[in-house]
Length: 111
Length: 111
Image (cartoon, rainbow over all chains, first blue to last red; front, side, top):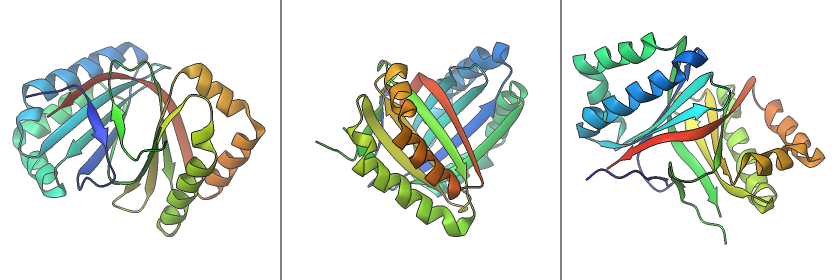
C-alpha cells in the first residue's frame, strides 16, 4: 500500500539517492509531474523501493528527487533495467543538467 | 525534546533547505561532524527549527544537509543572525563549494 509520508532515520540501512536536476523554470512543473507519474506507475513497484520525494525549488530552477532504496544492490538492480534507462533519458530531456549521488544518512536532529 | 527521525510530508507547510557541499574526501567526516554539533548545540534551539538530516556520499565527495524550517520567515530570521553567518563560514571553510537552495515538497511516494 502506497503512503505519502517518508521518514529519514539514521538507523535505517537504506541507500539514499539525491538527484539534483537543473531546469528552465518553464519546465519545472513538467519534470515534477514526469517524476511523480513514473514513480507511481512503475518505479514504486520495483524490488527494494522505499520512497521518492520530489522537491521544487522556490526560484523555479531546480527539482530534487530524494529517493530511498532498501540497499545499494536493489538500486543497482533497478538501474540495470533497460526501461529505467529509458525513463532517466525522459527526465534528463526536461532538464539542463542532472547530478545524482548516493548517500548514507549520517545524522538526524529533529524536534 | 530532540528526536532522531525526520518525516517528509507534502501536507506540511514547511520550508526545505537542501544544501549540497562538495568536499575533499579527507574533510567529509569533519564537515559532517561540524554540521551535526552545531545543529545540536545551537541551530536546533532557533525559532522554527524542525529538522536537520546530514548525508555523506558514498564516494566521499559530498555532504548534503537536508533541513526543514517551519516557514521561510523563520529560516530568514535564522539566516540574519551574525552567529549564523559565522557558522556558515566555518562549514564553507571545510568545503570546496556550497550550493544551497530552498524547496517545497511537491510529492511523496512511499511504501
